[in-house]
Each structure stands twice: as structure tokens, then as C-alpha cells.
Image (cartoon, rainbow, N blue to C red; front, side):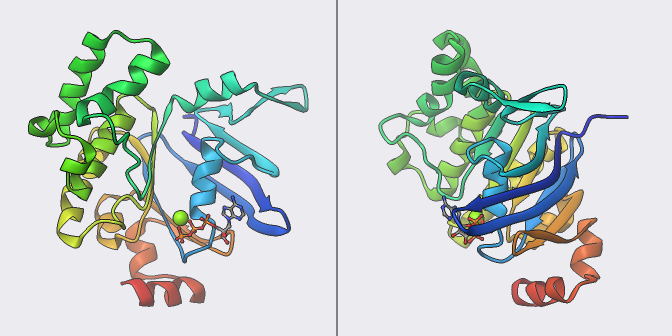
Length: 254
Ligand SMILES: Nc1ncnc2c1ncn2[C@@H]1O[C@H](COP(=O)(O)OP(=O)(O)OP(=O)(O)O)[C@@H](O)[C@H]1O
Ligand SMILES: [Mg+2]
């Protein structure tokens, strides 16, 4: 039996009185492209943020590659990890947001080199060599010296992907990576993600790109109001949804 890359069991999350995640159960297998869709406010970003412990879950268990996120278990008791231990866990998880969040005062290649040098203490020469390879992989070798303001949105997003990959994560989380882009820039970013999928990266992708989900996704979950309503192979869920809520959502986005 292979260990799931991500396993959520009865995950609950509230913000004050607002109950946002209401018992999420799901499993993401290694090398799987796992797509997450659902209406605005259904809790998709919150769930991603729980996976890398930017948010603490209120109940349930969440593990990445067999390790509990944010906790250590001794007997049947859970102990919170120290910040430094959480930071170590987070190193293995790359996250790409809707907004690219590049460091504005650094060039593309400096953005990609930053974390390995600062967080892992890697030499600049090693970090630079990797950053060059990664920028090549996302099709931006010729933009290494550009600052974020000198790049299109799509190019910035591809630098953001290269920056996340520089930490050599075992899991990549994408939160609507193309939804802030002009339509003509979306394709290049999706192509980079498709390449990552072909190379076997485990990815959870929150997206409204149903074409991508259908072609590249191995699994798809429809979430509404903090629960998983329906899940299955993307082709099945998208072409033959079983639940009224899924049908109604898809009729609006397809
Ligand atoms: N830090 C927070 N404090 C209070 N409420 C929050 C916080 N973060 C999220 N929420 C609330 O949780 C709910 C779910 O938000 P979330 O961002 O997870 O939705 P989403 O499915 O990603 O939506 P969208 O498609 O618009 O990105 C929303 O009602 C939001 O207002
Ligand atoms: Mg969101």
C-alpha cells in the first residue's frame, strides 16, 4: 500500500462563529493531479491553507506523505509542533497563488534563488544553476534579469511556479493560478503545469479551467459550503454529475 501524499480525515475549520470546512475527507495519491472546484466561498483556499498549516484545523486530521501537519502524535495524544518544525514541513510543499507575490525588488532569477539560499543555506552558485534550469523549464530563460514589473502576468506566474519548484517540493498546491490572467496568457501557465504533471509532480489544483481538469486531472472534487459534494474522475464528474448542486454549478461555469 502506498502512503497517500495528502490525507484529510474529518477536517473542520472555523473562523470565529463561521464554520467553513465541515468535515473534509479526501486522499491524494502520489503523482496525482487532484483538481478542486466549487463556488466562491466554499472553502477551497481555506483547505489548501490548512494543508501547509497556514491555517490550523479545529478538528480532524490532515497528513502529508504520512506525516501529520502541524502535530506529532504520542500514544493517542497530539502535540503541536514548534514553529521551526512547521517551517520544516512547509518546505516540502510549494504553493502558487492567484496573485503572483513575487518579490518586487528582485529579478526573476533572484526570486527563484531566494528561498534555497535563505532557507536552506544553499550556495549562490548552486541556487543559480538550478534557477537557470527552472526558468528554462517554464520558458523564461531570456527573462532572468527582468524585474516583476517588466514581466507580463503570465510570465510572473511562471516565475512564481519556478520559485516554488526551487525548494524541490514533493507536493504543489495551486490556488486559481490562472484566474487573474488575461485569457491569452492562461495557456502558457497551463502548459507549464501540464509539464509538471507529466513529470510526476503531485499537485492539488483549485481551478475554474475545466478543460485543464478534464485533460490533465486524475481526480476531481466538487466542494460546496465546506463539504465534498461529489468526487471522481474529472471526465465522469464533469460530463455526468450526480448531484443537483454539482449540476447547477457546472451549468454556470462550463
Ligand atoms: N482568515 C479568515 N477570517 C475569517 N473568515 C475567513 C478567513 N479566511 C476565509 N474566510 C471565510 O471562509 C469562507 C471560505 O473562504 P475561501 O477563501 O476558502 O473560499 P474559496 O472557496 O477559496 O472561494 P473563492 O473561489 O472566492 O476563492 C469565506 O466565507 C471567507 O470569508
Ligand atoms: Mg479561493
